Image (tube, rainbow, N blue to C red; front, side, top):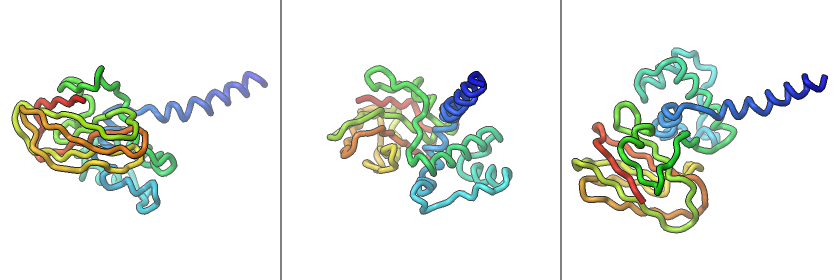
Length: 195
């Protein structure tokens, strides 16, 4: 009896933890693409029709993120359902490099396959003024957004990033996890990001 109870208790505790685990690629698609429109799910301003057939949902995802396999579509639906209760932007399960310096190889894990969108964790930031520098081997126009895990956008600008480092600055009013969302109209070259 006690073993059965402990087994059930373990499953109840382990299930949410297992549900939290998602591949980085899924979370990057969700945060870089889906949440640009669906962040309203958490406030009730929008509601994804969860009864939508798998084909309809796959078509919707494909229209924004390109064709995705059934596993990816299912994981995105799970993240959307979780969003409605947690109201937090999920962080890609990647380690922030030492010193917060992102080289192209480290950025590959938070870059979509088309290389036009990245979702880079900045870590937990305390209130105050923050900055980062960006550089590219060849100049390119990028849309840069710094987003709190609560969906507050604290920086949204388009800049040309090239070999000379561009420094961006943003305010943080509330401590929490922050992310840098980067979008481009063409594949992004060898990007480097540092503090």
